[in-house]
Length: 299
Ligand code: NAD
Image (tube, rainbow, N blue to C red; front, side):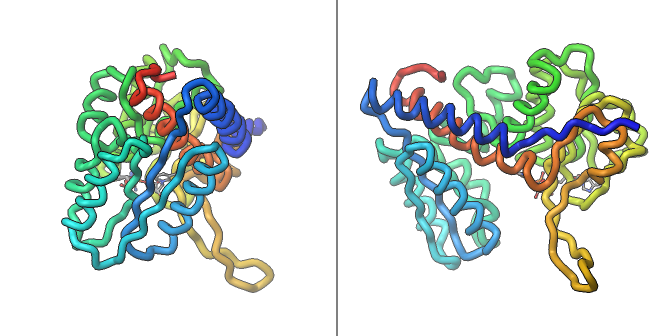
């Protein structure tokens, strides 16, 4: 019986964060430049508030100028767009992140497309999506979660994935589709699966690399996994578990970690896998945005 290597997202994220902090200090020293990140949150969704707090804290720890704009739940589309416009024109801000989901009465697409592509550190603008899918990533912003997954895959298998079969489970614009583009760009042979895929376990069994981004607790079990595969778990699911007769809430991923680890070569845990990498990739994108806006080159 094998036991998969645990891909530790916390350790990787801490190393990357330390590198970003060093580079930020050098930017200040050599160019009097401080990367600025603005986070916009509309409403009081508790999960979103936690995410936004973490992003602000990490930005400050990296030495960034960090601002948070909290708008009332009933804010109009015009109010949100006016704020984005103001941030688009603020030279101290290099990255703008609008925390999703927005309240239902707001047009999410119009808001995300209002952020100028050069400050779109989430990589949701059509210009950045187009650059990624066409392989023109030198000045593009790649969505943070798949970018973080890619670093974890590269750490296991190297940057050139020629000859590897990759199966992405999930086809969202935020994770599944950009993940597939990144894997393809790294020369993997990529299959994108989703809720309408026939024989999902059979397709996943062909994969040397599995990225699960579904949002269903423990859907991927060990008997879906090809021996020696690298398995990346993007899913974040809250489930109830019974501890000493008491019901407790616990976070779990899309992979059944214990059974997958008996077959895979390496796998990411939840929590402590993709999540910490996502936040630090936002910082990497913001640093990159500051450099590009100041004519210093991407890195
Ligand atoms: P989404 O709901 O937009 O997309 C889910 C995808 O899964 C869809 O394409 C759907 O077709 C597919 N799917 C649903 N049921 C399926 C099934 N039974 N079999 C196969 N495919 C199925 O979700 P998303 O935004 O891509 O997020 C996916 C998960 O990743 C969620 O749990 C989310 O919370 C998590 N997430 C985590 C991070 C992070 O930083 N760790 C970031 C983004 C999303």
